[in-house]
Length: 284
Image 1 (cartoon, rainbow, N blue to C red):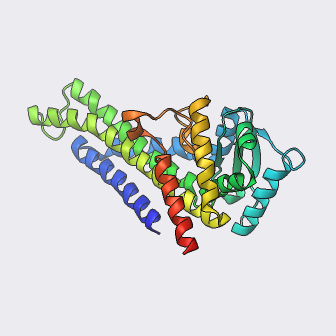
Image 2 (cartoon, helix red, strand yellow):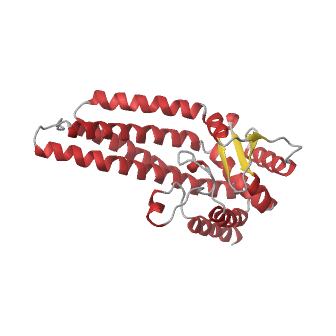
Image 3 (cartoon, rainbow, N blue to C red):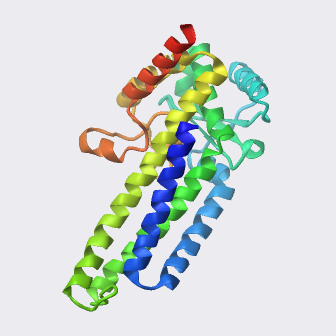
């Protein structure tokens, strides 16, 4: 509930930022057009998200005979969660990672890399797959699509503002103050939208950790898997695109120093700390 409230507040902040830019721009038609365009683009992405991302990573279908352990775990967890068993796919890379996609539990898919099947034991795999099924159960693809729509509209309008400033189309006033207002908004609005969108992504990762640990009843198994995956991804970086990096259970992209501020994933240390606290509370 706490995570849901935080996500709602962050989505509200994105909506408020969009309305603020509309006020600066002085014309609601441009705001509506940008929002509709972004909504259409992200609706297509949401509706076909599973096909798009699976094709991007050349994921191949897994069947029970080729991966009986993975299939058994996913089937068991899906039955516990009372959702249809998602389709399973394999990404042929030694980098250990996994992601879930699909617009709802009836159209869900879970992809695992060959590397994660090699380095994780059964309990750790169960922790990872519980996390991924939680993304499906929590409708996180829908949440991220809404956030992407709002952020995309904000970035498009900010681009209009920059061009307006270049050609002297001051916001509500044709004076120097209006020109500066356009410049400041055009620069700061996309940064703020990106940070809010990333905060939503990190919030959903924390929630999937908690929900997945509750589903498997073993928070420490997921914590152990996260340690292994983080270390392995540093040694064997994955060839992943920034547009899909947020889907993976651990960030496949480098996030050192200042770039951590713009990471789609919360720090592994904090995720592990929260899981260990869950385990301690369950034991007490």
